Structures are given as C-alpha cells and as structure tokens.
Length: 424
Image 1 (cartoon, rainbow, N blue to C red):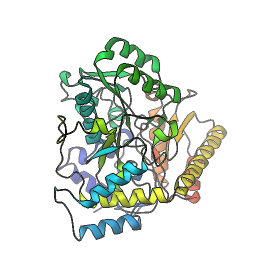
Image 2 (image 1 turned 180 degrees about the horizontal axis):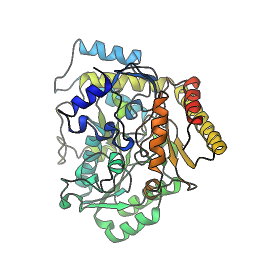
Image 3 (image 1 turned 135 degrees about the vertical axis):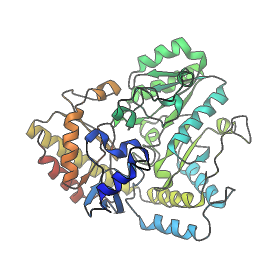
Image 4 (image 1 turned 120 degrees about the vertical axis):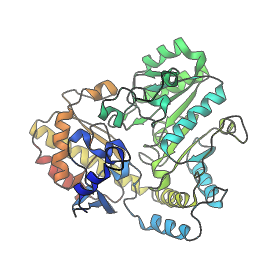
C-alpha cells in the first residue's frame, strides 16, 4: 500500500489516523509519509522516498536507526526473555549502570514512558513533602498527565488547545504556572504558596516549545527557592538526558536536582522511562514507603537490553558528543549565513544535539510567550519545502530538530542546500 492509502485507511481505526497527535501533520496541512524502515541517519517511506531523518523518533535514536549493537541486544534477549513481570538481573544491570554513571541519581524506579516518569516523580514529591501544589512553566510539556496539561507545550501548542477536554478543574487546581526563564514569576508564587509547594518541575532545556535552553541564573534560582522553602526540584530530562550531554543538562549547568526524570534514549528506541534521585526520597516509594506506583511492563527485559546497549555505547565513546557538537554548530552557522543572505527572519536556539529554528522578527526566543509569536505560516511553507527535498523534520514550529551520531557532514550539507533554496 502507498502512503496516502495507509494513512486514509488508518483514520477508520485510529483517531485522526495516528497514535500521537503531532504525527498527523495537521499543522502543515499535508498527509504524513508512512515510514517503513530506517538505517543510520536515513528513513524510507512506503512510497520508496528516502529522507535524512532529523526527528530521530522525537529524540531516542541518538545512535541512529538500527544500530547493530542495539539490534543484537534485542535479538539475543528476545530468544530467552520477552516479559516476566518479575525481577530480573538485566534490570539491576541497567539501574546500577545509570546510578554509577549519572550524577545525582542514587536510586531509581523504571517505568514505561516519559509521562509515567514525570507523573510518578510529582506523586513522590507530594508524598515526601506532604504538600499538594507544584510549579510548572508555561510551554514546558511533561506528558499528558492531567496535572500537567496547563499551558503545556508540544502538540498542545500545535493544536491550539489551552489545556485538554476531559481534564477536571480539580486536577489542575494544585498546578501553578510560572514563566520560563523568569525567576521573579517563581518568586511571586513562592511568596504566596511557599508552605504548600511540593516541587518545581522544569525542563532545563525546554524541547516542546521549540528548543529553549534555561538561563543559568534562572535554573540556579530555582534551586535556591526550593532550598529556602523545603520544596523539591525536579529536572525533566526526558529529552535532554543523555542527549545534550551524557549526564544531561544538569551536568552542563552544574545544578543538583532532587529528582530527575528520564525516557527516550534510555530505552534505545523502545518504550522506557525512569525517575530517580536522592535515596531518602526514593525510599518513600512502595514497597518501602507509602507512595504507590507500579507497572507490569516496567523493567521489561528486551527494553532494558536495548537501553543498556545504548547507554554503554554513549558512555564508552565520549567523542560522539564532540562529533554531534561539531555538526550542530555547522548547521547553526550555515543557517545563520543563509538567513542573513536571504534576509529571512529567524532565531536559532541550540543545546548539543537539540536545535530549533524559529521564524520571527524578534531578536530572541526565551519563553512560551516568545514562541507563540513566531510565524507558523512561514514554518508550514518551510516544512513542506524541506520534506519535498528529502529533509525530514518535525511538522511543528514547537518541536526540536535532533542530531544523531550517524549524521554526517554530507547530511548537514544536504540540509543547508535545501534551506538555501527556500523562499518565503
């Protein structure tokens, strides 16, 4: 079957023809390609079209598609184990490896997605502190848990949904929203609600309103306010963990969160998540403590094998991050040069292997308000132009461009050649 036939028939069986809204390409008014296979930095659709992939499954494929070591780990494990719902040695291996190679994680609990990780971390923070309220930031997307769907980023921005139907008011009454990169907005909330704030949850490098790195003073200010008020600081490193650096954004900013949430890369492309941090906090989880959280598929042997193979490779080859940094800088420098030549109104934000191109007359994009003012109409034209030239990027102004270790200088050159021929 061809792309359009598969997508149109999918609409009969799946809402919108997709299992995650952004895949529908609704914001760019075209049918999505239906992907058949991937290898390295390239993917191929059912019509036989080849693309250089700058989506990387929305982040996890930092080693590229079908990395031989990851594939072998999956194959060898699946011959003897698929699922037990019981304790296994491989899950100990992965937990021990993360705790021994990642700062600020003394103990962790595995789950199956980023949403599970963040919602569980917030429940743990509430159980540990005995408080109810949390602070999140406008434009930061922490998954589709009810408490987070207030001024969220990602597909919620693309769809223009202020929150979500089906979320009761009671579910969000304890969610307080501050402005990203604006510490004074957080101070105001603490002044009013400090004694009942369980945690502040933040993406240290926001990746769901486009890529917006946190200012160092802003993130350090969050650490200070949490310390002063007895609240926990949760770093959502679902996207930035093992991507902007092996030890995540917290290693770049040199800030110690109380809890860290992880997903995407830790599963090597398979469904996986985890949250971890200080031992005294993690020991509040059942069966040791009163905070309940469970999952039949958590620590699944095949997922754990793929994740361990991925993390070991990233840890053992630190030159991968040097390589990605070099390619990322080449991409940014090239786009900037072309934009100046063609007088295109762009702002570029990058942190390591995460990058965003905003179409805006503004000089910077620092928060949700800035991102919302960007020209989505121009982005839609840009997207259609790039994908028609074999450059596969996210179909939304508010998603990231991702690089993998399999991308080459030739791939970057192809991106820049395509961008150079773009006209508004």
